[in-house]
Image (cartoon, rainbow, N blue to C red; front, side, top):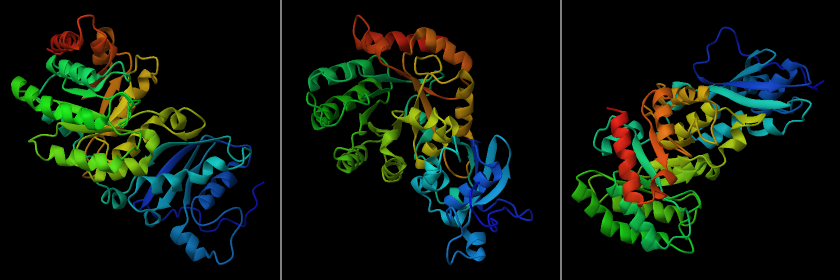
Length: 391
């Protein structure tokens, strides 16, 4: 039994709508009385705790308290007043899941956010992606997916060798080349300052010669001189008609970092899924749909995701569901694009074409950089195959 008074102020009034509330649906398991556990979550995530507090008036509860909308054997639905939030995804995440994951195992053996509905009063304060689907417009219009080449070996190459292989992949037809998530700016064998200097000398010439745009993704997931590099990349991109550099952040850096960078940069931002399994694959955390929704609201232009046919894959059924989240109408917030990778080859590309509806990008590492004749021919072979596949 969870000790409390009568929970006055935490029930959602039937006479009201949830228009000014953020509504959250939770999957849950409990050994306690289900409704008492649900009310405890309302209290814990808003005005109160186990028991009614001194000076916690009914007026305060009605004004600021989370409200229980419904509770059955599998799902709890709670509405949070919009005045409880600033337009920061970290603040929202702390409120809707925060202490709930710490509650006694008897109370919640499972507590996972299944879905979130945002009111316009919150959405209107969120900036969202700067590019999103518009990123495709940077490149010549293609029927096929944009190809992101992932440099392999990920680490260990000298700056000169790294850049030479990048340029070969660009010249072979890849629109984007990205650094791997382990390739930190201050890498022992190749410093980011050196890579940028060489690319500034070579990349504009490649773009001019090919008469096609190219984009290089810099991995800033380490936080090393993060804002120094973000500002430097902004300044570089401002000198060109289209950005030649993008940045890649990681989920493990947190919503606060991701949203801050997205809201304060003029360069495309890609999100690597490192760490997403921690919050999407257990009894405590969030669904894949919510994971992608929150990253979209942070302002992510492209979310990298394991392909449905890789060793890291999520179910094939979930792919189109997460694409729906990136496409769903959210006031003036742009759509987020997906890039599917991990073990992608010609066979996988054909399967993806049959399964995935809508626009997406593909990431390819070994298929391009391990090609016997080198990255130029690896890229050329893949691009020719994709052009044929989509024509």
